[in-house]
Length: 347
Ligand SMILES: [Zn+2]
Image 1 (tube, rainbow, N blue to C red):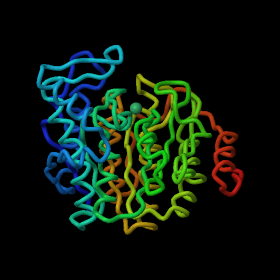
Image 2: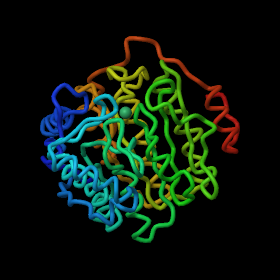
Image 3: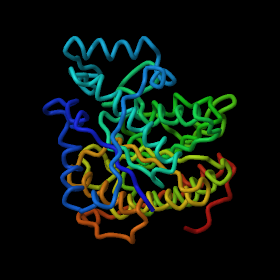
Image 4: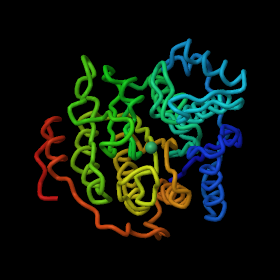
């Protein structure tokens, strides 16, 4: 398989010293990529900025203008310093959204089988009229709307970031053309994504949440993908799979308490590669979201790219968590029941 990588140094210019979502995240990925030799085996596609029309399919004109104005006037922070804009942030955010769109274009045009947009700022907490949780523009949502504008009728977004993608859920909550599936840790930011949040109106049933409690690891995440995502995806029949690829569910991440390993997270990517192959001619686009353990982030992205390339499983340099992981089959059984899926067999 051929895999495209979309990256631009402008993504480093959006940064704030002392903030966990800073330029070092992407620098660690680039360093790991350079050491891995994967650059020679992937296709580098330069991102392009998203147009105002493209961003405007998701975000309100007033919000787009606000972010641009904040950047032009030197920057600002809100949410108690959680979310920030610096002078380069508007251009970086527009390019991040454009990278996700360009990745979709590349996959739809057959320039590559699949793609990974290595972008900052992340996007899945940004809603139509507000940025929060380190996110300014919702890259994956903007890419999904671009795919629909290009003529696709059904897009699946799978989100394995530690956190619930509240922005993505809100944007597509009543939209039957986009199915949003998320695994996340319950009881932390942003506080949304309970099992009973399933969509609204014509979008009822196209929001699927698996909110795990702390201590759940690889086995539970894999079961969520096998028992919930796979049958839901087969029922939905997507023409493209987009992925909010965050690596903060890793056990070493300072922001959460899920216990995934690099091998486990990569196993989720392998499942997505297989589902895309089965359902939509392999069309799969990953876009970077969170991940705040720099070692796990670099290793996780490289291992994910190996999975996109169809390579056999690689070593996990960080190994298993130092604590035992739990299962949460009762939660999975409830999600299956809510979404009319076959009951959980003994997993
Ligand atoms: Zn996250």
